[in-house]
Image (cartoon, rainbow, N blue to C red; front, side):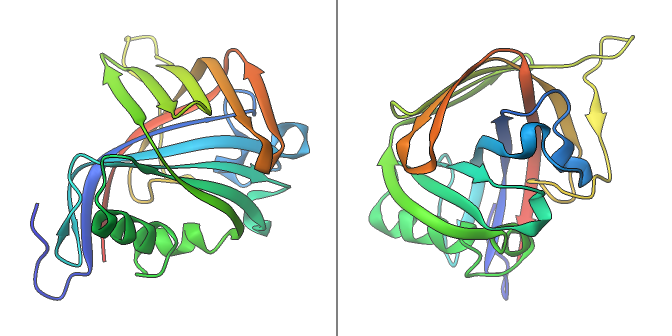
Length: 206
């Protein structure tokens, strides 16, 4: 993918997301999270993309998140993770997009963040094979994800949800057979099985 004239960024890729809510996470339909709060790990892998002329293809950006109440009330607290394979220029570009500084479809999501508790460069494993996903963020997060399926065996999808981490695209809802997250800065000490998971693809252009 090349950035067209007048385009700040153009990114295509895939999403893996897990959280402490039951299946399906109420946040996606605007309801309060199960248990009153939501602790999550969200990762975007860029298959093809450029940001202000910087090629970021093949890199992954992720966040660990503490959401203290209804998702639209904001005040999220996050730790951001940049793929250790990124150059300093690529890291700056990714942070500019995912912190909302460059506007576009990601800015509304970024506006819900109240505090960035840290930015870390870590190895990130992002794999999807026949609908099964694996996400590992340094020594902090580990998750194994599987989609839910309908009577025909096709993956169950969520369309037109009031909230989305991949705006404009359907989400494949599922469960995390394993979700382990230990992030002291966010108060995370999570070790759960069979809670919410989301997969999907994205195409962000601004």
